[in-house]
Length: 96
Image 1 (cartoon, rainbow, N blue to C red):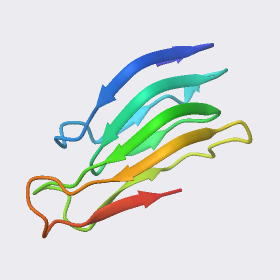
Image 2: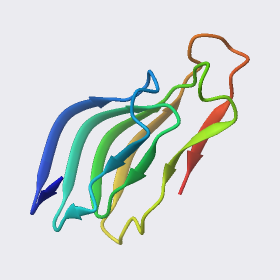
Image 3: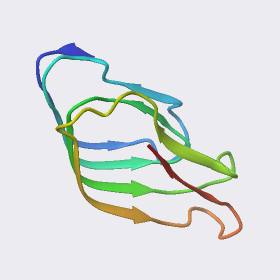
């Protein structure tokens, strides 16, 4: 995404369908109301995420949602929830 500001009501990558969400081309703020991830690389700086939900599933065993870029000094995440996905044996988490 290349823009000054990007606004999203919701993004769901919890099924493992996306490997990377790249917002590095946004020069201002990235606003996401609800972001659902599994083992997703997130490249975002100066974001405002109201709710981050991290799920795990069969393809994300031991993998993490990884905020891989410099997240900047203006980044905020209001709520983080860790949920089991399709089966409780799968593990994952969040890395910054």
